[in-house]
Length: 179
Image (cartoon, rainbow, N blue to C red; front, side, top):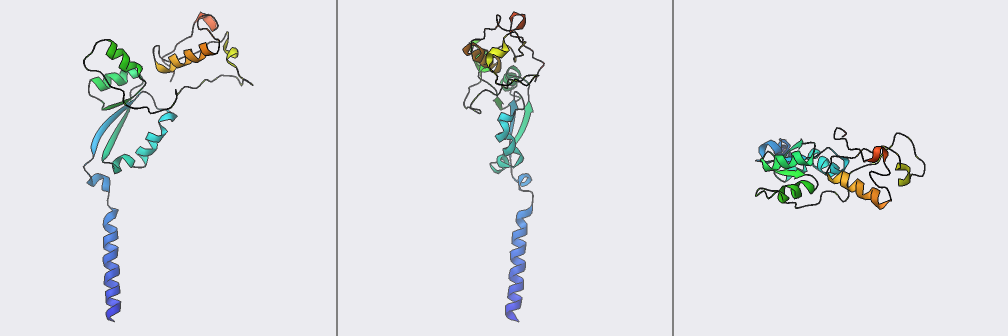
């Protein structure tokens, strides 16, 4: 009989101890809030989105407020005005601000993605695509001065396509309203 009572009390105590871990630990922690401004929502930021959705930042004591600023210029503005703590963008905005002689400029400290996050897409299925297929076509780039457009222009030049000569209307058409 004594063994039964000890077993029941032990099981109850163990059960109560196990249940104390079921509370909302994130709300009990004193999380440091960090605002992260990103230039665009992109598949290249997938690891960040997974970490946020799985609570990995909370596990490290951080609450992430993610905002989409829609451009490196706006991301840099958010950093300089202290509306954001971290900005995910290409290096061009930092260079522009630094070259203007500003005392308050951002310092690039990490590489989030290994390559440019641009895709070349077409309205038609082009079998065995080559960059020669772009000759005479209208090409939509990104924001003038932005890393995606500069990278695209570099790739075109490396493949013998001259913007202003080989693309339609004699230019690489840039549209900033395309996301």
